[in-house]
Length: 198
Image (tube, rainbow, N blue to C red; front, side, top):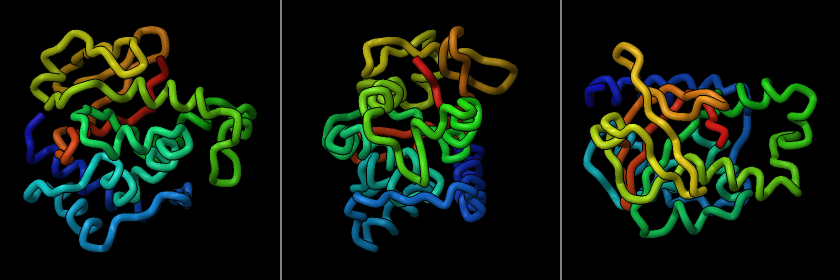
């Protein structure tokens, strides 16, 4: 997966986010200043790296708004907003919508009226930590690995089909990596098209 393809996919995601069916936003996060938002957006466009953290990027990009909301709900804002270098496999808003649709009637017990339902904090935390790996692992390191240990003390497995790469597990399925190597001051983001379940 080359850099031009990754940048193209991010641009496409940002365009699609204008049509986002979720209409959700992060309510409690103190948004970065306009200059920090611009920095994060230019970073996502493949321009020079800035001081935006993983959480800054998620909160600034419309297509990661549910992810950012989930991070805050699960109390992981200090983790993704801190200095420790991490790799985040970031599901898009559509990935979360697809997960909720797969849950059927149970979805309302997890996410209702644009907010995560109280009492699910540990559940959401466990899922999110399955999307975070210690250290900064750029695409080359990810696609050449068989498995990657995550922050919830289990592994995501890596597989290739034709020119595409996927992460996840045989029990709950795999997510395709649709964009790579979005740099942050505290790590790197790879965008995936599904929410991985441990």
